[in-house]
Image: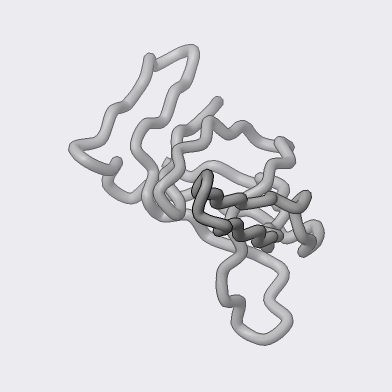
Length: 105
């Protein structure tokens, strides 16, 4: 069984046991689980896919947090030729690595 979820403007195809990275969100204290409730589609080999309009009613994906980490550094460079202007900035995005525990539909 698999599901397609929407989180933070990104869509992910997830299965039970899959480990993937999402944008970091505010967790309640030391919460070790996340519930994704914006499920766009649930696919099952026996019944066929169930597509939501825009989301599937009552479907959710339960996941547990594996770790919090920062992604690789991204360098942003701006430059105007012949003007003596150059700018260099860096950025490291904070991410959560999560493991899908259960898909409820």
